[in-house]
Length: 564
Image (cartoon, rainbow, N blue to C red; front, side, top):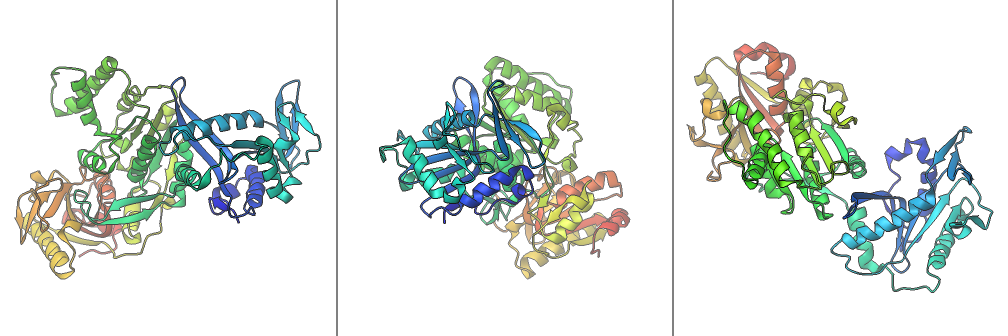
């Protein structure tokens, strides 16, 4: 049996009646001998000095170590070609006729794009390769010897040929390379190279401990929804990806940046939070430029030789002055990137995103992806993003970070809670404690830390204390001793393994830890509390403790299952 990628005909394709012809072909190809490798529904991107970014795609690619590559274009239904209009048509089962693309032109473009892509790969070198192509008409019988001057019968696989597909494929290879030329054979290494960029299984590694240390990691396999996203954006130059907390937006943004960089694209990965940018810079390939937005503004302004700009206050500096300097810097320096990926898009003003797009070498075809979660829009900046780009977002609604117990809390603060799902373990229920004064608050947090570390044997690096405001403006300011523990800002590189990391909820956005203690909820304003709880609670992977003022008790008791 042939080695198939994917191993089974995908669920999303089974639901599409328009792909029934491809399903037939997939089933027939799966019966080929095991020295054949088959890739279904593949796409890739290449760089062109003349035209910038170009796309390549194919319904099927068949690879054989001795024969080479065969590209298939599938056209279902009853086929008709109008020579006067130079137009191909397909008639469906309901008798409706639809214009379709010229399959021969598609195949020629796919072959050229495949050759260009292989030459881009460092592992490919200058090797020559046999590449053949064929049109598949699985619902008809092609009786004519010559269909069109550029489409002889040898280039067609029809319904009869599908019954003896191995013979037909071998005949097609021989027709393209009659002398049985093995000079262009793939060999085992060539097959492995194809697998590496057409069907490379992907795992995303995400920290279980405090993000700075990255010592303990849990491997998260991509869900089918996430794999579908990577396939989707492979075919898009502009894409919006809206995902709930825990859906893997940041890891997917990082993975896509890695893929584009490996394909030779000058790539920028930009987010809003400084701590998240520091983490991404640690784990991203060196070839990927990683910045938080205002850090990018500062860097390019410096490169452009821009001097000091006056400002009214910090808000004016970050919201207006630095973005204006980025615009001026781009006008002086020119474009910078082939691809830009924005994470934490909800924290950006639309005007900032428009300025970022001006950094693309190709303003029309350059790659621009935005990952965001409107429910984490704590700065209330992002509005009408889909109207600006005039494209609908790809929705990620699967929470693959939290336990179900934590997810059930988090989803209560989401505007589309009924649409969110979580397939993780059930986990322990979150704990909620209430205080009436700061002394009680401190005592509850101290006892919780002592129990977690000394009784339940949780390593301090797996615990993060989150505050609703900057910790230096609370009783949990960094450097303070709390029982046997010393609190340290999470990004403090001088921290010891026995220290407890503390951060504000807004600064920790995009990051996560095994255990989170959230404290500082001091009122019952649902508008404010809901946003904080959504962001903060979703940072905890497996265990969540909330320490809140009694003023917020009535609100929290309606949502959280356990209060003390």
